[in-house]
Image 1 (cartoon, helix red, strand yellow):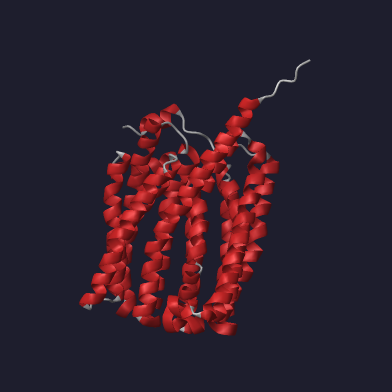
Image 2 (cartoon, helix red, strand yellow):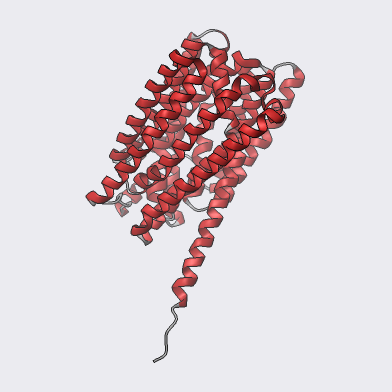
Length: 439
């Protein structure tokens, strides 16, 4: 009897791998371009304005991270889980509401930040004022990026981020040549350049944000959005509390050194966040095709990120004393260098838990991911501030690393427990909910 070779599934399998590889490549490329603008502002302020203004910028930057996580939790995270790989008309209807939600979040939090900046004095108040004025554009631009990746069009996200960077760099050069290089104008230029890119997003997507649909989107995604909001804000809030506490205990200069150590991890974070752009949509696709492979996918994602983080940390430890430190940070590199090792270990711990976080989101286990994030974030605040009291900036970095490694098993335990409980995966959009997007 002749043996029948089943070639079609094999061909389809390799086709899926190739398409996933292309999406991953665009994710890393887009994150590289996005991070370039953030990296440029960080390095520019560190080298030009000194540790105190860099510390003020660090406070504004973590506040931006808080707003960004709020926008993603309410808007783009549910979009990635429920509308990845959907037909184009469905995607457009969802994106109209999702981007409108991001804009409303930016206007609301931006107004609060402006009010806070008016109450503060000195460089910190100026940094907050500039951030509040440009926050709606920053959050809208970020929502376009995730929207394009949900549709598998990473090239459009890359194009949008490229525009942001192309607009930003000459403006920074102009500020320096005209003598207006201070923390206000640097942050404002950064946010204004993102607003320009956000304004181009509707032309790329052929969709325009509808602010009036923001509440409707949040209501329809209420089983995911509020929990993702809590998860994201708890995560960024722990970073804010750590930085605010370290600034109060140790001063702005020490905070500037901690921010500089985080900036040195920037090239690896390009890979980390670039992978993050595509891991959740890919996990959602794997869940549809072969649910039993989800755990393996999550484990491979964590392993790959962990190895990459270790490799970059070793590069920094070896290359910084040989000239790279002065090239990147100027005079700040020497007090920053002792913080590189514990900062690397903290990032590695985050990589270990990243795969489990992706799995929890893909399965729609929002309650479990929130529990893991609250526990991990609470330990970050406690351990880092205890470290600040005991050993200064070095103690903050070490405390963050300890908390990161304690938190990683919690994420995996929650994922494993959720899978064993046989909880249903996230519900898909129904025809009724999709029709409501058009109203």
